[in-house]
Amino acid sequence: MDTTAIPTAAMRIDAQRLWDSLMSLARIGATPKGGVCRLALTDLDRQGRDLFTQWAKEAGCTVRVDEIGNIFARRAGMDDTLPPVLTGSHIDTQPTGGKFDGNYGVLAGLEVIRRLIDEGVQTRAPIEVVVWTNEEGSRFVPVMMGSGVFVGAFGLQDVLKQKDTEGKSVGDELKKIGYAGTEKAAHFPIKAYFEAHIEQGPILEASDTVIGVVTGALGQRWYDVVVTGMEAHAGPTPMELRKDALLAAAGLIQGINRIALDHAPHARSTVGWIDAYPNSRNVIPGTVKFSVDLRAASDDVLSAMDRELKALCDGLRNEGRVEVKLEQVVYFQPQPFHDEQVGAVRRAAGRMGYSHKDIVSGAGHDAVYLARVTPTAMIFIPCKDGISHNEIEDALPEHIEAGCNVLLQAMLEQAGIAES
Ligand SMILES: [Zn+2]
Image (cartoon, rainbow, N blue to C red; front, top):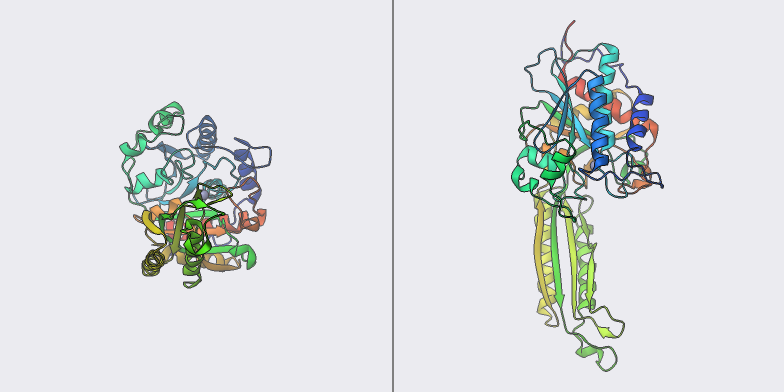
């Protein structure tokens, strides 16, 4: 038998079991409005981790936990020396999070293993499902902590010292919930990594598409801007003599919005936070601080946007009314995913007759870090109104099912089927 052929092409996941598992996990930290609040390394996170671990063990998996609390559940392959095909996501949520963000990717992976067992299918390479620690970054920074340590983006000792607003550290909280593991928190050879996730945006729903074939993630540059003018009385100060920092900032914000429009379709520019001083009805604002978030699919475009932002600030400075300070505070490189694995997702969606389109992830995901060290692809499914990080986050059962079927088929293609 040719191990690259798919004799199990007709295999489909058990949609009801996957849905029931999602709803069971969603009861841990359930909020009155139908969402989930399960912050990283809290007792609720422990309960969620315990439930996943119990399910994985019931499915015959061996479970290991690494030093940053990432959980790996493994189903042996026919050739157990081969690097595993890995899938997973996270089960921590935002304070007003939903049932599907992250949880879907973890439980879709578990459903793949459960289905292989139902069908008695043995893969050549092992299959592993991972739960990454603290993807959301809500209680502890940085975001994508577990996958970031795994790929070496930050050091283990540095993140173990990170504290929440109550002064509790990652290291202490990991021990307290029983997930300070002994496996080294470092990447090992992996054949391929797949992550199924709700889109968290409106593109798939708007185009009536079931599967997003994610080709990569946008790069990001974040900045802090300070515009300084002069506070003065709103009555006695004539218009032509003012140094109105808020008015200057407003012009700048218009220009920043223009930057992304000029680099459509994959560029984004956002001013999401602003603070005007002294913020008083009858005082001309003297100082305005605001944030800028620029995103693009390639470093060329992102660098061009950076130059345009600097030129805007220079232009305003040269008018001589206000001072402008611009400081870059965060940089994430654009991260293309890998052709073979992206192709596996596209082929699987096509074979099963699901409508699909290529899409770029505007948000960060554990997969974006994994792509630095291992061949990676993601599968997006629509979410209602493109909303996530919200208790009303929702996804349709048929989309949940379709994304997991694509995951199953893509993983089978990469893992190979053992001859029996
Ligand atoms: Zn997520």
